[in-house]
Image (cartoon, rainbow, N blue to C red):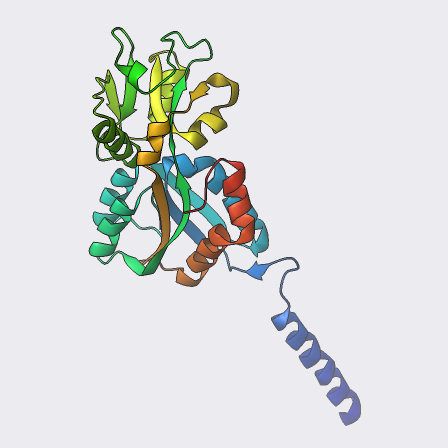
Length: 256
C-alpha cells in the first residue's frame, strides 16, 4: 500500500470510530442500563406506574422498579437501610422522619394533595350517606392504622367532628382498606378520593364535608443513598412537570 492510500484508510477508520462513539438513541437520553428504585405511597400505584412507563420510554436503557406501601412502613424500611433512589410519601409527617434521619438529598417537593372519601360496595348495604353513619350499629367499617397517612387523616376528622369510629380492622395501607370493601368483608372503608376513582364500578364513593379537615399533602424527594442521583432527580422532575401533574389530576389528585 502506498503512503497516500494508507493515510486515507486510516482517516476513514478514525472518522467512523469517532461518529460511533458520540451517537445517542433517538427519542430520549442514554441511561446505560441504570435501575431506579422508587418507594411510593400505596395510593400512588396507578399514577406512578404510568409515569414509570413514560420515564423508561424517554430514558433508553433505564428501568424503574416500585415498592408501594403505607408511607410509615416505607420509611421504616429506609431507616433500616433498604436501598432506594426516590421516596414519595402520602403525608409530610413521614417525609419529615426521612429528612430528620438524613435520608433525603436536598429539599422534598410537594407535588399533590388528596382528600378522604368513604368507599362502599355498589349496593351500599350499610346505607351510608355520611361520616356519622359509619358509627351505626352493625356497620362494619375498615380504616387505615393510625401511623398510616390515611389513618392519621381519619383521626383528624374524628377529632374535628367528635365522632368516634369503631372499626373492625385497621390496615397498614389504603389499598388494603379498599380491598376489604371490594371483597365484601366490610360495609365501608375510609380511603382517598383517588382510590374510589381507581376502583371504578367495584365501589361507590360517599363524599363528606368533614374531609376538608384533613387534606393530605404528598412530598417527593431524591434519597441521599441513591447511586443514581441524577436519574432520580429526572424522575422527580417528571412527577412535578406539567405532564406529570396532568396524569395525577386525571387520577383525582389535587394540587398541593
